[in-house]
Image 1 (spheres, protein in one colour):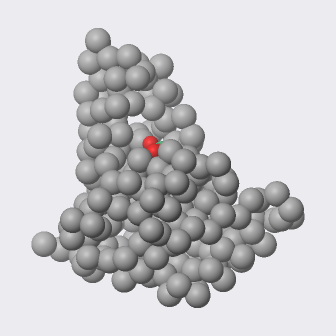
Image 2 (spheres, rainbow, N blue to C red):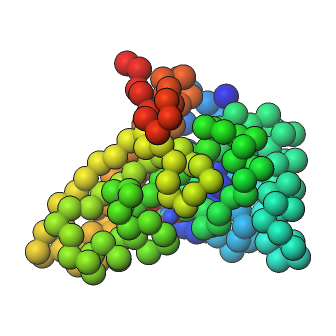
Image 3 (cartoon, rainbow, N blue to C red):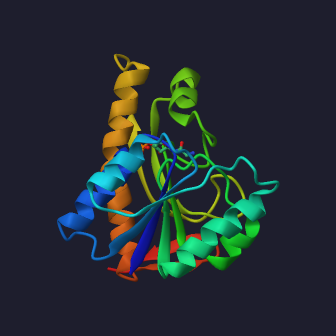
Length: 200
Ligand code: GAR
């Protein structure tokens, strides 16, 4: 199976996925890394790993649909069977989601449905929660909403700072996301309405 990973930033999740492919944990190929941000450090990581990149700035596109259409052309050329959003800070359009229904994954640094959005670790920390965590889910038309594949919680200790909490969450992401991708590529995820069943 060919995978496309979508990134906007540092690419630490991309790196974890690259490692899981190299070690044979994930038996699939990362065929393309897509970014909306030409300065994303993730692109350097992709290039260092010898993975083709496709950068498309949203500037100059009048709609989300038109932007996504260009990306979809690239995905078709590469026969992509799974799209992995790894810190991709854009919403994807409805036609894109329909075309790749239950084939788009996202990692979110909180226990959904709590703390949706782009500053979830900080939002949870400032809210004073005693537990937060990581969610990997399928992407649907609503923000941070699709069927949940895996979740793992982490305690927020009194001695935690935002930085230590971020570090704990990222560590979980780097383990949980490759695991969800492995399950998908091995055909072990069955979606029934909002419920994801994991076959052993
Ligand atoms: C990750 O923590 C991911 O969960 C988060 O962006 C970070 C990207 O880091 N995504 C979201 O907040 C999406 N709502 P990375 O570029 O180092 O993988």
